[in-house]
Image (cartoon, rainbow, N blue to C red; front, top):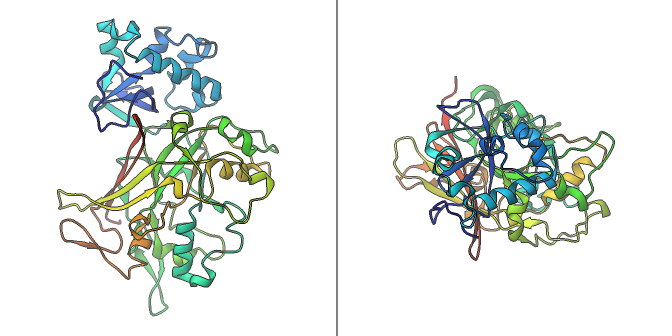
Length: 419
């Protein structure tokens, strides 16, 4: 599958990928739907105006859904519409099809350099849930605070543990993150207020719901992929000292709700299909509503880098993989709705920190420094146990299988000082 668009070798925005996002330009500041290919954004709204979406669903809906400032209306159409759009875009961007490549004026208008666009949050997020789906991460944190014998809580291997987060503070990659203030318990037992001294990143991915379900109805694991539009990179910033003091008995609050960063391009499950793999063996076998007879994990290579403010170099501090995740996207969605909870287009579900089995695959500074006991040395010679003001944290994700490459781009945020 080849495109007439020149795609750099290191680009994950290939003809197989076709990730969706929301962009605007200086000349046309209204946000609208586009897809990324190589170093360009394809203006889906303009293609719709030109009546180039000719399938049975999008022939009727493309001008409406692709002119929207979010993906929500497009996602609500359901998977047949998503697949129809992806196939048509692949066709229009292929070497063989001359509809765009044979029309110089159209090609110039439709293909906009990535350097000339402003990206926006890809969807309106009504609700946000964060899971705790990595067994390695859960065991590491449990060992740290409860000892190896009690590392996993009894329920952990029976259900995907999760909590409801704050949708209003989810921001796009490139947005600065202010160090939060809060209550902390000092070593002498006194309670102090001030800026977090244990600010952390969390290497995560998240899926966005496309088609929702009615209140009182559940989404079966067999049908879950019909409701998941796609996947983004995510950094669920965490203030570990604030979190440690507040989380009993109801869980995270101010230690988490000050900021969560996501990447701008949404990679569809259809693009990820070649990278399906068997996940970790689940023991005990989950209850029937969570038991999946098909592969549900994906081979996505992930890395996290830190670049100090006064350094020109970034240091990769973690390399992990989505395939390490114990509970799959399908299991997370099936569990979330088994009680009749209704999901809506744009609802976001994070995986929780994705840690692997080796120290260099631990997906947070909490684990890499073992709660501050060990330092991580960066290329400029500076050391970190947790994040410092000015640190730029970047998450990247890529899938490769033979000649098929799919990338997520990057998810970045810079720490700025507390107020």
